[in-house]
Image 1: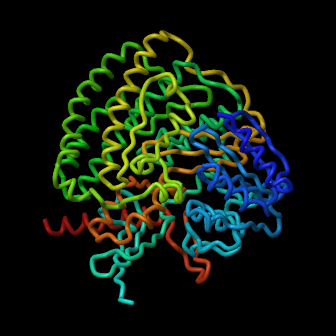
Image 2: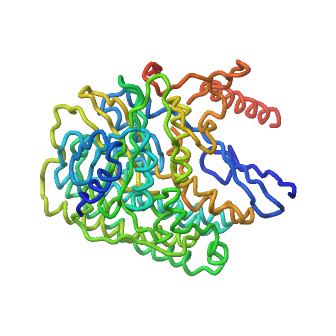
Image 3: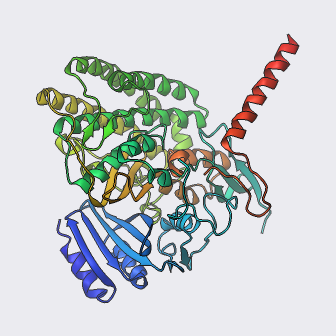
Length: 148
Length: 401
């Protein structure tokens, strides 16, 4: 199935939001966007284009914090990543949990393990450690060394 | 507002195979709200993976789940192969699918047994687990292990299935087919199971989309998603099979989907065995010299639904980032929909209906409490405590004698 209409539509509607489009193949597309246009694009994918939210992967890199929001269009076997790069010192982005419940846990997890702040999240409590982990220590950041 | 009673299930409870705390807020018999505490099994596997080589990660991710132990290496292999840009040989593809489908059969049998146990129908429990045994024996014959098979590597599989073993595999499958008919009949035609599961724990299509549920949980609500069909991998595009769905979305529909899926799995295995015979001898791996820089998305349809691995490589011999999403992570969250408004006894089977696998959901040994600075037990202390308990019991028994 052709994915071009989706990309064209995204390009038309979110002209300023898109920074880079990488089409690896017909089934894998990565779109790097401004974090401000994330809610709008996610809403289009989920509500209009029939995408399912798979999960989001946070990564601590030299550029700061990056999140890949993975969406799946099952009828075409397509995985589309909305890729945002967040500020190193003050990583924050709008929460998607008010749109679909599926992102609720993963945003709490990223907040707990990476220290990324999700704005307007309905309940940004700790998911895994239930308050048994020190404040301000984020185990999945690169400076945190695991013993192994 | 009336007073709500808190009924805790867990963290350690005979209903569950693994630790997790569910708090049911009840008004009389009716569950009005549900909350849960997770993290009892979080082992930081995503972080650990960054300190292992690609070869070692296979053994690490195999230990995420004890039941569907092959689904994580499967998805990880798909992700790394996407980065490298290779495809395994047909022979390796068939072997991969055989292992994947055998695992689906033994996992679904385990669930059917446990579901029967939760309902107080222990005949189903004993039958299902009895019939599961030969499948595990089959695994031992093919891979050398009853679980955690260590079959996967980048570019293929570690062991071949020799032609001399195929008749013995076929024999166990033929015997299993008869037993499966019996078990399916016992579940599908039983009026007590109908009464206990129909209309219980219903999830609508919208709930599935909202919580992004996957696997039999989604398919039982009429959402026909299955990675094996949608984003084909391994030998699934080479064989004929169909995606099983049901419309009702209740616990019975989930049982129906799982039971019928086992027939499809048997058919897939048989076709793959034929494929192996036709392929004759051949390579089971493609040589990979290095993993280049890039990202890879690996998906595999585990017994519980889609397993998703996102791997980021910088060209070194270990991943920079390895994100793992197990199916139970999204399926467990649907309890907010399926349990509220049910009686306590129905809520427990609704909890079990998604076949929750907590080990998959959580991947921290806690050391100090942040506020009080108080030490919290670590794994070694827990083992010491357990050992001292056993010692105490043994001494008491000796004194009684």
